[in-house]
Length: 249
Image 1: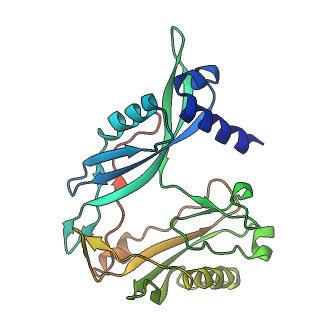
Image 2: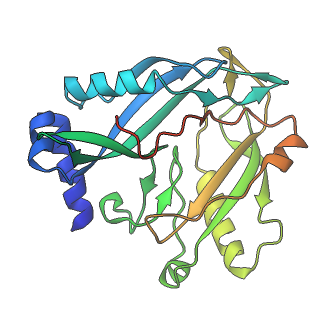
Image 3: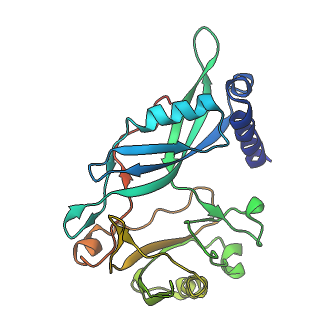
């Protein structure tokens, strides 16, 4: 019930703006946006979710414009990229009445799967997933969690080929079941080519797939060493450098 409450309050805030938040100062909302991030880490062309009220859109544009990102590299040079992220914020009362929005976190949107019903899911999956893996029921019942990381090429038909399980390198019996579920889903994906400067590049994709029974999924492994030894990998997505958790929107 709490999850549904948070979602409903977020929609109310997006549709009704400041008035809805003022009436519910403890509400939590998500504010989505898309931006083009230049090679120097500066976001431009910031486009908040169209469902947000004009005041909230203005707040998101102003705040995101102040942020800076660490960019992925290709052939030793940072490259521009587009990000689609969401700000999770909570409304807190301020002196003199009214409220302010305090940022809890900024992250990439997650998809949730549970018995083919995203509204009931407790299993966050990375996006895009076309379709997401099916969580093996026997592992879900035992709350077996894990992050698997794959490297693969994308052929002319947009299919993942030459798939390599990068992490874990020695999967146990449970992880082998997760691996089978992930590969079954990957076989159905249709993937776009990776582009740098508007041109497709022949790079190898690195993708994590998370299986979790919790709202806060386990963190993936540090792959910096693996990346350093594999220059053929596609540029990593932009990472937010500005420390925004706990600050006001």
